[in-house]
Every structure is written in C-alpha cells, then in structure tokens.
Amino acid sequence: MPNESHPHNWPEAAGCLYGELGAHSLHANVRELLAGDSSQRVLVACSGGADSIFMLCQLWAQADELDIELVVAHYNHRWRGEDSQLDATFVQELAQQLNCPFVTAARPENEAAFTETTARALRLDFLRAAAQEHSCQCIAFGHQQDDVLETQLQRLARGSGSDGLAAPRPIHFFEAYPTHVRPVLHLGAGAIRMALNACEIPWREDISNQDLGISRNALRHNVIPSLSEALARNASAGAARSRFLLEEEADALDGLARLTLPEAFSDSVTLDRVALRSAPRALTRRALSAWFSAHHLIQSMSAPAMDLLMAAVYALKRKNRLSAGAFYIELDEATVRLVSAQVAGQFLVSGSIEAGESLMLSTGALLETEFVELDDALRSTIMTGGVNADLEAYVAVAAEEALEVRGWQQGDRFRPLGAPGTKKLKDWFIDRHIPVMERKLLPLVVSQSGEIIWVPGFPPADTMKIGTATKWALRLTYQPRNPI
Image (cartoon, rainbow, N blue to C red; front, side, top):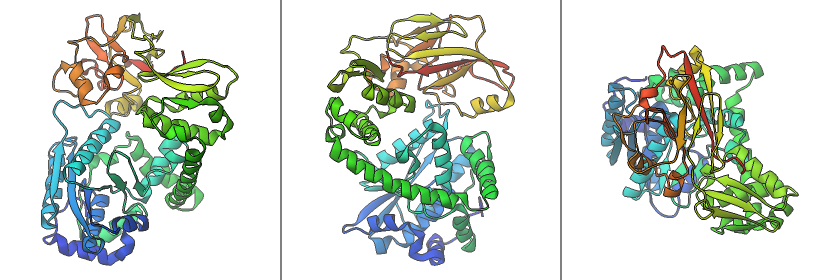
C-alpha cells in the first residue's frame, strides 16, 4: 500500500503487525542485544519506506518487553522536491502517534548530493550526530535480506574480502560511534510487504528506486531475478546464509590476527615487518587494515593499494615507500612505518596536462585524462550520479584546452555540480571533514581561464556539467596511492 494515507491509529497498526510475526520479527542477535541488562535508547532511521516502517512498528510493539526507548530520525535528501517533504511529514506524523521523539534534518542548500556515496555519508553524519544528541546507544537501520545479495554483488565487483562480503551485519560495533543494528536483516522484502499489506499499513515509495541507471536498482530488478530463475532457487536466501558464514570466519580471523600481530590494532606508527612476513597472508592483510583504521587512513587504501603493500611486505626488496593519503608507508628490512608526507618534505608541485596525457604528481599520485564519446548509457550514469567523485570526473571542455594542475591556495573558490553558488574551497574542505594535511596534497584541475573544474572527492564544476546534448567529455581519473 505505497503512498496511501496513513492509518488513523498507528499504535493499533503496529500491534497488528507484531501479531503477524511475533518475536521472530526481530533478528535474534539484535533482540538479544537490545534485551540486555540495562535499558537502552535506540535511534530508528526511518525513510518512510516499507522496510523502515516495518522495523519501526516492530520495535515499538516490543519496546516495553525489551526495555528500550525509541527516537525516530528522518533525513530529507531533497532529491524529489515535494515528494521528499511528504516523506518527512509522513514519518513525523507516525512518530507523533507512537509518542516517540522525532528528529530530522535536510540536505543543506550548499551541499551538492551528487552521488549515492555522498548522500549516504550525509545521512550517516546526521544519524550519528542525532544519536549523540539524544544519548542513543544504537542506531537501527531497515536493511533486509534482499539487500545482502545486492551488497555482495557490488562488493564482489570491487574485489572485497570476507569482511566486505559479510556486510551488512545484523550488529556492527564501533569504538567512536553508537552500535549499528539491523533488526529485520533476516526477513525478505516480500515477507515484509505481505505483513504490511495484511495489516493495511501504508508506506512511502521512492520513485528513484525504479531508476535502472542506479546500479543497485539494476541488480534488484534485473540481475538478481534472472540469477534466481537460472539457478531455480532463491539466490537472496543463499546469499544471506553465505553472509552469516563469512561473518563467522571474519570474526575468527580477526581474533587470530589480534593474537598474532597485536601492535597493528593499536596506535603504533611502526610494525614488525618480520612478524608480518611470518604470519599467514590472511592475518597480515587483516592486521594492516586494522592498522590503517587505527590511524584513520583506511579510506586512503584502495584494494589495489593494499595489494601493492602486501606485495611490498613479502618482497625480497629491503626498502620501499608507498603513498597513503597524507602519509607515506616506508619499509625497511625490519619495520613498516608511517611517515607524514609533510615530515617527508613532500608537497604538490604545479604542472600542466592536455587531453590524452597522464601526469605523475610530486606526491606520487597519478592524474590521467582522455576524451570519451558519450553513449546514452554512459551519459545517464554520469547525469544520475553513478560516478565515484573521489577518483573520477567527466567534464565538458574543449579538446584542445590545456589544463593546469596545482595545489590548493588560500582564497580559491569552487562551485561543484548542484551547488547554488561558489564558496571558498577551504569551506568545502571543512564541510567534508578533510584533514589539513590531506588538503595540501589534493590536486586542483584548473581551466585556462583560472576556474577550478575538479577536485578529487567532489563533483566537477557546475559550469562543466554533462547535459543531454553533450556528445564528448573529458574523463579525469585520479589514483592517489601509486608507489613512488
């Protein structure tokens, strides 16, 4: 019953929904966590869609039994104009009828939510801030069983390991943030919608979920049904079991790595290379990932970069150095250590580049350019935000134009795609929580007129956007972690 008027009595509707599935409506592990020795406050992330409405109603119906208090949170991405506002109103009215505190926020006017990655980051920042403000120990997300296979397929394409393929987990602990819980991860989308319909409970339907230009939607509507049909079995249910087994194995490997290479799970800047080489590769890889996480550098290590580092650790070469964001990883015969790029005396030296050329930057990063002809599929991918702005941009510039590549300077102004106007690049950096050292190493791609047309991590300049009539575009790719 998508987008119908809400029922007159939401508490009654929630009770009906609980009657459909009972205690089984909540994942056993999540239920056990929530029913702990002390009462807890749970921030419930509710978009207004079927999955989050089902989750909220089930948590509310069992709140007294579990001794939990709910706070309802809704983030308005403002992607769909009036419909987005109707989503927020729908969730607010539901929260009020359930007598739950309600907290909301909308995407700022000056924040261009160009990609799904950016949108998720904005929403997560809001949820974590709201959880802290309302003293919530957990944040509940409405991911369900069908989301597992979609996530696995995306991560298989990226080459993820057991940790990546074990996501999303029903419970995910963090040192600095509230615990993430997914109470309905064990239930399929079909079962959830059947239960909602049985109790005549409406939900809000996001029309963008039908856009096949978004990779997750294409997987959901085309690939996964075809896969299930070809195998004559429920591929989503099988993927959910694999996720559970991978979680068990990932946890076991994590425990062994902590015993074998404990220094990697601390804030130590130096690791024992001999110990790393002596351990099984699976434990070494896991220990290195934990080490980067401890130093807030995990986002600076792509899968290829980790492969390069693993090869360097085990290689016969006695000395090596690789880049990792604002740091270098230096290897000698006995140790692996982190050295600040500033300490190492590195900075971004200006240069120029033309279409079809590659430019090795003084930081060890690589910038490549090529002119590409746009077909309908690629143009749609670009215009719907299907480009990873951290590593890639498509801009409409003349083929013969030479571009300058330089570092950030005080007073630089930038208007990324979708922003209402320009503002200081420094302010954009602050909004995105980009560390000062990282800012000084990011390359700015500048046109002949002096306009900043791209900074890795942001959408390209609004004046250079790809339109429906654009036939050729300059593709810019940034590889920040090449060995030097």
